[in-house]
Image 1 (cartoon, rainbow, N blue to C red):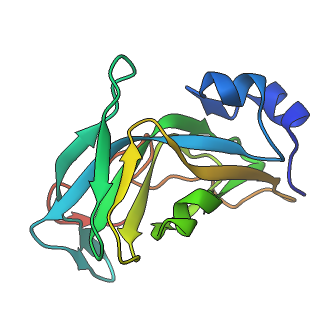
Image 2 (image 1 turned 180 degrees about the horizontal axis):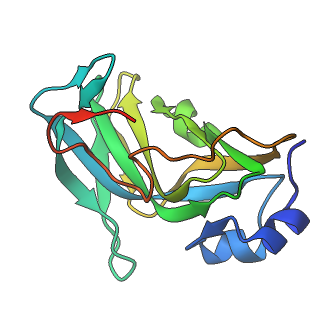
Length: 176
């Protein structure tokens, strides 16, 4: 079951929401804003027991006191970070989808699931799959999140190494 806004406001699942999302949200989602854009540098490895993610180079950052933007170049992949943070209890999972304006402009957002027990900021991959550059103001809404109630208890709540919104491994590490 997807949770509606009357339930979401009681549960306080998202912090740092924009004024618009607090006062006048639409449908059954909250829209999340883009805080940082990173390009990738170095190397990456995904093994059975170990992994290493690339280094990140910050390309743009949101400043609520100053309007700034970033141009997503065609064919280029970026990692992005949200302004908002989620706080998921053991019985709630989050699903992330791009806003329709995002993909209508050629930007594809790559997401995972927000597992029960995860707390922190969110990172999403964005690639401009269109033929034109796309200018996005930092702080703009680009991803929607909706929440599902999980029936039954999970064996474990989220306990992964990305807890809290960590951005990169900073070298090779053992996966848990």
